[in-house]
Length: 250
Ligand code: MF3
Ligand code: CO
Image (cartoon, rainbow, N blue to C red; front, side, top):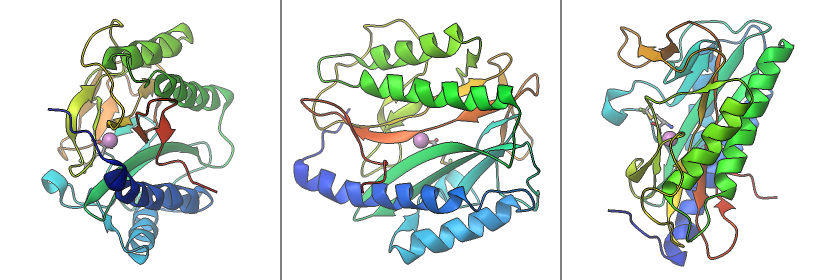
Protein backbone atom coordinates (compact mmCIF):
# COMPACT_ATOMS: atom_id res chain seq x y z
CA UNK A 1 0.00 0.00 0.00
CA UNK A 2 1.39 3.39 -0.98
CA UNK A 3 0.94 5.94 1.79
CA UNK A 4 0.14 9.49 0.67
CA UNK A 5 1.43 12.25 2.94
CA UNK A 6 -0.54 15.33 3.94
CA UNK A 7 0.99 18.81 3.66
CA UNK A 8 1.56 18.76 7.47
CA UNK A 9 3.37 15.45 7.21
CA UNK A 10 5.44 16.74 4.30
CA UNK A 11 6.48 19.70 6.41
CA UNK A 12 7.79 17.33 9.10
CA UNK A 13 9.40 14.99 6.62
CA UNK A 14 11.14 17.89 4.88
CA UNK A 15 12.98 18.61 8.12
CA UNK A 16 14.36 15.06 8.24
CA UNK A 17 15.30 15.32 4.55
CA UNK A 18 17.06 18.65 5.10
CA UNK A 19 19.22 17.09 7.81
CA UNK A 20 20.28 14.49 5.24
CA UNK A 21 20.98 17.19 2.63
CA UNK A 22 23.04 19.25 5.08
CA UNK A 23 25.02 16.23 6.22
CA UNK A 24 25.99 15.33 2.65
CA UNK A 25 27.08 18.92 1.97
CA UNK A 26 29.03 18.93 5.25
CA UNK A 27 30.81 15.70 4.26
CA UNK A 28 31.73 16.94 0.79
CA UNK A 29 35.04 18.55 1.68
CA UNK A 30 35.81 15.98 4.38
CA UNK A 31 36.15 13.37 1.64
CA UNK A 32 39.81 13.50 0.67
CA UNK A 33 42.87 11.27 0.44
CA UNK A 34 43.98 10.10 3.89
CA UNK A 35 40.58 10.06 5.59
CA UNK A 36 39.12 6.73 6.65
CA UNK A 37 35.51 5.83 6.01
CA UNK A 38 35.13 5.38 9.76
CA UNK A 39 36.13 9.01 10.29
CA UNK A 40 33.42 10.05 7.82
CA UNK A 41 30.97 7.86 9.75
CA UNK A 42 31.86 9.55 13.04
CA UNK A 43 31.63 13.05 11.57
CA UNK A 44 28.27 12.25 9.98
CA UNK A 45 26.78 10.69 13.08
CA UNK A 46 27.82 13.62 15.25
CA UNK A 47 26.46 16.09 12.71
CA UNK A 48 23.09 14.30 12.40
CA UNK A 49 22.64 14.08 16.18
CA UNK A 50 23.64 17.70 16.54
CA UNK A 51 20.67 18.54 14.28
CA UNK A 52 18.39 16.69 16.70
CA UNK A 53 17.91 13.78 14.34
CA UNK A 54 18.74 10.10 14.57
CA UNK A 55 20.93 8.29 12.04
CA UNK A 56 18.38 6.11 10.26
CA UNK A 57 20.56 3.23 9.18
CA UNK A 58 22.20 2.35 12.50
CA UNK A 59 20.56 -0.83 13.72
CA UNK A 60 18.28 -1.06 10.68
CA UNK A 61 18.01 -4.83 10.09
CA UNK A 62 21.25 -5.05 12.09
CA UNK A 63 23.23 -2.61 9.93
CA UNK A 64 26.15 -1.54 12.17
CA UNK A 65 26.73 2.09 11.13
CA UNK A 66 25.16 5.49 10.50
CA UNK A 67 26.27 5.80 6.89
CA UNK A 68 27.12 3.49 4.03
CA UNK A 69 30.48 4.27 2.44
CA UNK A 70 31.00 2.26 -0.75
CA UNK A 71 34.42 2.59 -2.37
CA UNK A 72 35.17 1.91 -6.08
CA UNK A 73 33.80 -1.56 -6.94
CA UNK A 74 31.53 -1.44 -3.89
CA UNK A 75 28.03 -0.68 -5.13
CA UNK A 76 26.09 0.00 -1.92
CA UNK A 77 26.00 -0.83 1.79
CA UNK A 78 29.77 -0.53 2.33
CA UNK A 79 30.38 -0.60 6.09
CA UNK A 80 32.63 2.22 7.35
CA UNK A 81 36.03 0.87 8.41
CA UNK A 82 39.68 1.77 8.94
CA UNK A 83 40.05 1.79 5.16
CA UNK A 84 41.77 5.00 4.16
CA UNK A 85 40.58 6.75 1.01
CA UNK A 86 43.19 7.24 -1.69
CA UNK A 87 43.57 9.74 -4.49
CA UNK A 88 41.56 8.48 -7.46
CA UNK A 89 38.98 6.53 -5.44
CA UNK A 90 35.26 7.19 -5.72
CA UNK A 91 33.14 6.80 -2.61
CA UNK A 92 29.38 6.54 -2.51
CA UNK A 93 27.99 7.92 0.72
CA UNK A 94 24.43 6.98 1.56
CA UNK A 95 22.74 8.24 4.70
CA UNK A 96 19.40 8.56 6.34
CA UNK A 97 18.00 10.68 9.16
CA UNK A 98 14.93 10.21 11.32
CA UNK A 99 13.28 13.28 12.78
CA UNK A 100 9.70 14.26 13.71
CA UNK A 101 8.55 10.71 13.02
CA UNK A 102 9.79 10.72 9.43
CA UNK A 103 12.75 9.53 7.41
CA UNK A 104 14.92 11.18 4.79
CA UNK A 105 17.33 9.18 2.61
CA UNK A 106 19.90 10.36 0.08
CA UNK A 107 23.23 9.37 -1.41
CA UNK A 108 25.98 10.89 -3.47
CA UNK A 109 29.17 9.53 -5.02
CA UNK A 110 32.19 11.73 -4.30
CA UNK A 111 35.53 11.81 -6.08
CA UNK A 112 38.56 11.46 -3.79
CA UNK A 113 41.06 14.05 -5.03
CA UNK A 114 41.69 13.81 -8.78
CA UNK A 115 39.92 10.89 -10.42
CA UNK A 116 40.28 9.59 -13.93
CA UNK A 117 37.94 10.77 -16.68
CA UNK A 118 36.04 7.49 -16.93
CA UNK A 119 35.22 7.60 -13.23
CA UNK A 120 34.15 11.20 -13.62
CA UNK A 121 31.90 10.22 -16.49
CA UNK A 122 30.40 7.37 -14.47
CA UNK A 123 29.45 9.77 -11.68
CA UNK A 124 28.08 12.32 -14.15
CA UNK A 125 25.86 9.79 -15.92
CA UNK A 126 24.65 8.43 -12.57
CA UNK A 127 23.62 11.92 -11.44
CA UNK A 128 22.00 12.68 -14.78
CA UNK A 129 20.04 9.42 -14.65
CA UNK A 130 18.71 10.32 -11.20
CA UNK A 131 17.67 13.75 -12.38
CA UNK A 132 15.99 12.29 -15.51
CA UNK A 133 14.17 9.75 -13.32
CA UNK A 134 13.00 12.49 -10.95
CA UNK A 135 11.64 14.48 -13.90
CA UNK A 136 9.37 11.52 -14.68
CA UNK A 137 7.95 11.48 -11.13
CA UNK A 138 4.89 13.40 -12.28
CA UNK A 139 1.35 12.71 -11.18
CA UNK A 140 -0.34 10.57 -13.83
CA UNK A 141 2.84 8.77 -14.88
CA UNK A 142 3.54 5.26 -13.64
CA UNK A 143 6.40 4.04 -11.46
CA UNK A 144 8.13 2.25 -14.30
CA UNK A 145 8.23 5.45 -16.35
CA UNK A 146 10.84 6.54 -13.82
CA UNK A 147 12.61 3.16 -14.07
CA UNK A 148 12.70 3.12 -17.84
CA UNK A 149 14.03 6.66 -18.24
CA UNK A 150 16.87 5.89 -15.81
CA UNK A 151 17.84 2.67 -17.58
CA UNK A 152 17.73 4.31 -20.99
CA UNK A 153 20.10 7.10 -20.01
CA UNK A 154 22.56 4.73 -18.35
CA UNK A 155 22.66 2.15 -21.13
CA UNK A 156 22.77 4.66 -23.97
CA UNK A 157 25.95 5.96 -22.34
CA UNK A 158 27.57 2.52 -22.28
CA UNK A 159 27.14 1.70 -18.60
CA UNK A 160 24.95 -0.90 -16.93
CA UNK A 161 22.24 -0.55 -14.32
CA UNK A 162 22.11 -2.70 -11.19
CA UNK A 163 19.02 -4.94 -10.95
CA UNK A 164 19.48 -6.48 -7.52
CA UNK A 165 18.62 -3.35 -5.53
CA UNK A 166 15.87 -0.81 -6.09
CA UNK A 167 14.51 2.51 -4.84
CA UNK A 168 11.51 2.70 -2.53
CA UNK A 169 8.71 4.65 -0.97
CA UNK A 170 9.71 6.42 2.25
CA UNK A 171 7.95 8.25 5.08
CA UNK A 172 7.22 7.02 8.59
CA UNK A 173 9.22 3.97 7.53
CA UNK A 174 12.58 3.98 5.79
CA UNK A 175 11.27 1.53 3.22
CA UNK A 176 7.64 1.77 2.15
CA UNK A 177 5.80 0.69 -0.99
CA UNK A 178 6.31 0.94 -3.87
CA UNK A 179 9.59 -0.56 -5.02
CA UNK A 180 11.23 1.57 -7.68
CA UNK A 181 13.48 -0.44 -10.01
CA UNK A 182 16.01 1.46 -12.09
CA UNK A 183 15.18 -0.60 -15.18
CA UNK A 184 12.19 -1.95 -17.05
CA UNK A 185 9.53 -1.17 -19.63
CA UNK A 186 7.60 2.08 -19.27
CA UNK A 187 3.90 2.26 -18.43
CA UNK A 188 3.85 -0.35 -15.65
CA UNK A 189 3.22 -0.28 -11.93
CA UNK A 190 1.18 2.08 -9.77
CA UNK A 191 0.16 5.48 -11.08
CA UNK A 192 1.90 8.38 -9.34
CA UNK A 193 -0.21 10.66 -7.16
CA UNK A 194 0.47 13.95 -5.37
CA UNK A 195 1.59 13.23 -1.81
CA UNK A 196 3.70 10.17 -2.66
CA UNK A 197 7.23 10.35 -1.26
CA UNK A 198 9.83 8.29 -3.06
CA UNK A 199 13.53 7.51 -2.68
CA UNK A 200 14.93 7.09 -6.19
CA UNK A 201 18.41 5.58 -6.26
CA UNK A 202 20.16 4.45 -9.44
CA UNK A 203 23.25 2.27 -9.05
CA UNK A 204 25.41 2.36 -12.16
CA UNK A 205 28.26 0.02 -13.11
CA UNK A 206 31.15 0.60 -15.44
CA UNK A 207 31.09 -3.09 -16.47
CA UNK A 208 28.34 -5.68 -16.09
CA UNK A 209 25.27 -5.21 -13.93
CA UNK A 210 25.82 -8.29 -11.75
CA UNK A 211 26.63 -7.72 -8.09
CA UNK A 212 27.39 -9.99 -5.14
CA UNK A 213 27.20 -9.41 -1.41
CA UNK A 214 30.43 -10.01 0.52
CA UNK A 215 30.76 -12.25 3.58
CA UNK A 216 30.09 -9.31 5.92
CA UNK A 217 26.46 -9.76 4.83
CA UNK A 218 26.13 -6.16 3.61
CA UNK A 219 28.71 -4.86 1.16
CA UNK A 220 27.50 -5.31 -2.40
CA UNK A 221 30.31 -5.29 -4.98
CA UNK A 222 30.34 -5.58 -8.75
CA UNK A 223 30.90 -9.18 -9.88
CA UNK A 224 33.61 -8.03 -12.30
CA UNK A 225 35.10 -5.67 -9.66
CA UNK A 226 34.78 -2.70 -11.99
CA UNK A 227 33.67 0.69 -10.70
CA UNK A 228 30.18 1.55 -9.53
CA UNK A 229 28.41 4.77 -8.54
CA UNK A 230 25.19 5.47 -6.64
CA UNK A 231 23.10 8.52 -5.98
CA UNK A 232 19.74 9.02 -4.35
CA UNK A 233 17.18 11.66 -3.49
CA UNK A 234 13.96 11.60 -1.51
CA UNK A 235 11.31 13.36 -3.59
CA UNK A 236 7.67 14.39 -3.34
CA UNK A 237 5.20 13.88 -6.16
CA UNK A 238 3.04 17.02 -6.52
CA UNK A 239 0.38 18.20 -8.95
CA UNK A 240 3.19 20.03 -10.74
CA UNK A 241 6.91 19.40 -10.78
CA UNK A 242 8.36 16.85 -8.36
CA UNK A 243 9.99 18.41 -5.32
CA UNK A 244 13.41 17.15 -4.21
CA UNK A 245 13.17 17.08 -0.42
CA UNK A 246 16.84 16.16 0.09
CA UNK A 247 18.12 19.06 -1.99
CA UNK A 248 19.59 21.70 0.30
CA UNK A 249 17.14 24.60 0.44
CA UNK A 250 18.84 27.99 0.30
N1 MF3 B 1 19.53 3.92 0.85
C1 MF3 B 1 19.69 2.56 1.27
C2 MF3 B 1 18.39 1.82 1.10
O1 MF3 B 1 17.41 2.45 0.86
C3 MF3 B 1 20.06 2.53 2.68
C4 MF3 B 1 20.39 1.23 3.20
S1 MF3 B 1 19.93 1.21 4.80
C5 MF3 B 1 20.86 0.09 5.63
O2 MF3 B 1 18.34 0.61 1.13
F1 MF3 B 1 20.70 0.39 6.86
F2 MF3 B 1 20.36 -1.09 5.36
F3 MF3 B 1 22.11 0.17 5.26
CO1 CO C 1 17.27 4.34 -0.05
